[in-house]
Each structure stands twice: as C-alpha cells, then as structure tokens.
Image 1 (cartoon, rainbow, N blue to C red):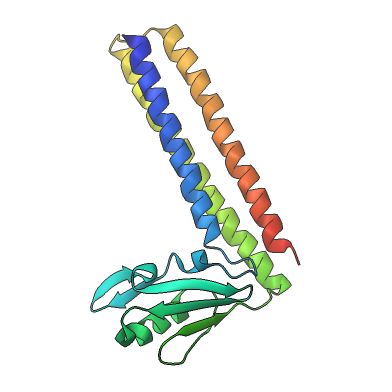
Image 2: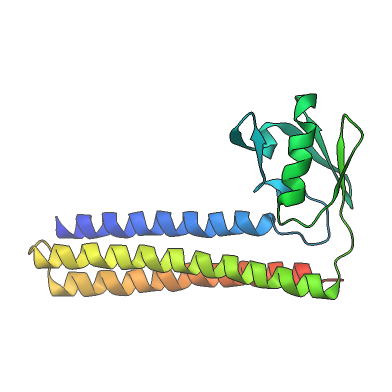
Length: 189
C-alpha cells in the first residue's frame, strides 16, 4: 500500500518535471538567435476587439527565407493591431506592412544583443530550475505527510527522497544541456 502511494507520488513528480523541462525548452524557442523562426512570435498577444488573443490565432506566420518572417492576418482589419503588438513586444523586430502582409526582417545580431539574449535565456532556465525544485518540495511534503500519518515507514520515505533527488538532478541536468546548446546557438556568428 505505502509503496504504491510512494510510486504514484514519484511518477507524478516525474511527469510534472518533464513538463517543466518541455515548457522551458518551448520558451527557449521564442528567443531570437539570428535565424527567422515563426516560434519567435509565439509569446505575442494582440488586442483584438478588446480581447488579448495570441498572434498565431489571428494570422498565418511563416519564415520563407532565413532572415524574413511573414505574418498574414486572416482579418485584414487587424493588421494595425498586430503591427502594434509586434512593436511593443520584446522580440526586437520592426514590422513593415503593405496592407495585406507584415514582413519582419531578422537582422544579424550584434555582440551586445547576443549577450542580452544569453541573459534572457539564463533567466528562463532559472525559472525552469525553480519550477523543478518546487515540484520536488511539494513531493517531499507529501512523502513526509505519509510518514507522519503512519502510511509509510522511515526507510520507505528515505528511499523515495533519494530517488526524488536523483530525478530532480537529472531534470536539472537536462535543462543545463538545453541551455548550453541554446547559448551556443545565440553566440554563433
């Protein structure tokens, strides 16, 4: 009985940590690296008739060339709102529109901008590490509750904590390797 409950807690922690790593990896894809990618615009929300709507729900976003992103709105009347949202975002791209299509030229990154982007990526990675540690903390709390209620013994709790720590270290290691490759991608000239 106790072993099943502990296994369930560890499995839940494993799934939640995997989701945290996946989420952080997705956040990394929204950081510019000098190459055009539709994912750069994933975090942009547009004020569309008073509602904050994700840009990818209002337009087709594509990268026809290595240094160009195009945004084609489904509703032509929303082009000004989309342009405004892109200008106010932190992507650092200036939109130009011809009435039907918004073009975003992706310039070469300066050394200073590369360093700034590395800081952004490191902050995103730290948020991911904090999320993983919070999952560990919650799971530890539940393990201690099981022990306090007499559902699990000290040995079972200790074994579960050791396994949980290995899981945490592994997921943080995954984040570190993703961070390292993203930093290299940003700093690559």
